[in-house]
Image 1 (tube, rainbow, N blue to C red):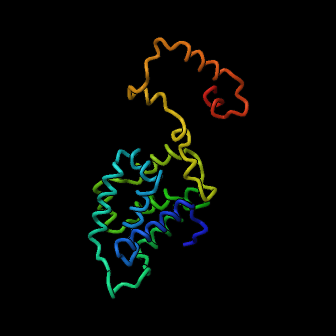
Image 2 (image 1 turned 30 degrees about the horizontal axis):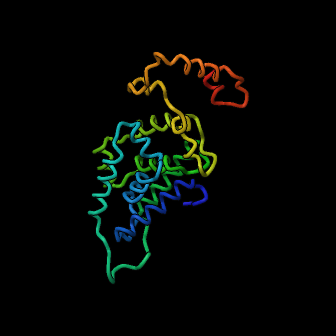
Image 3 (image 1 turned 135 degrees about the horizontal axis):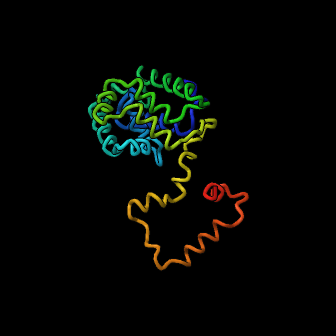
Length: 213
């Protein structure tokens, strides 16, 4: 594993997996620790993908934590303080993640590559979980396409740019479908004001340019 090839979010997840293992008194980092780290990432990409796949990230997270509690813990004199090992299946997962990134013509290994590699090369526990939750590669790739579009990973911090409009804008069509839009009757002035804004010069405003196009 070459740490220089991994994005900041990927390295955060790996470090978090280590912390999770230590907090459970586990001396070996398993794929379970890494999956929980991906699920717990603040504003993380993997929970977004799972939701688009029709899954419930919170339910999967709870199932992972239950599986972690079933792993043997090492305490007392048998434990070497602060020392941990990496399971062979995790080493294999990182190698697969790098192959996935290369196949997608990405320059860095991002969290989605780790997640896809986990689907490709799961250990027995992860395989059982993914079968229970019906997590499949095709669905994951489709969800990733919706979030990421045609972007390539060319920097060590690409995840924050995914679905930028979704994060910082408002999907009025979806709000209308969900019946969350206020009635437009009697709001002529607001509508005229919106039209004036969109009709202004669009130079140097890529968002308005997109809508105007």
